[in-house]
Length: 116
Image (cartoon, rainbow, N blue to C red; front, side, top):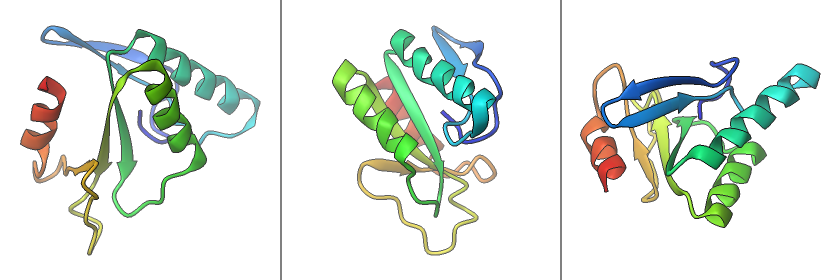
């Protein structure tokens, strides 16, 4: 789940997997609340959830809601810190994977985590 990029959930096949990209969880207003609800509904169809948070950004309450929802439902959760190449001095904690789409950093680790 990405913050603020996607407006509605979209689905794309990726090999034997179906990747569902959702709306951001930090959306506001009446329409924003509907987007958040749809994003959280997607968890009902997930075996694995990947929560994407920009490196250097603080977790917001909505992020913690996703974490607790995944724990309650027994959904494997991978927390990814994106744009790690842009956040000076950022170090992901042991439960997070730092990645950079620009440089490819951390992508092998992310692939292994998804396959595990």
